[in-house]
Length: 100
Image (cartoon, rainbow, N blue to C red; front, side):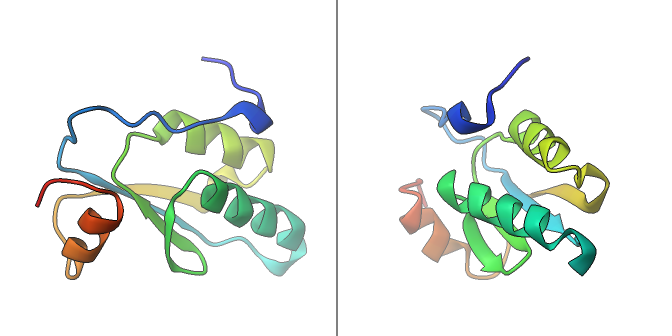
């Protein structure tokens, strides 16, 4: 699958699979520009920021995160975790317009 950075979009399936994608990264100050660019791109893609380096989305995004983090040369510093339930998820279900 090929992407162009400026054209990347997260596909929003009609039916949610019930899994959250938690994207976490730990990028050193030596790569501050890449870290900030990654953070900005995740926000543009409508990931919800939980902390400065922790974002969440209910939509499949593995290929897109892999591509983006590789483009910024920080792929080894990025994890995607799959979460089925967490404290405070009702707020995010409402934000993303998901069924409760």
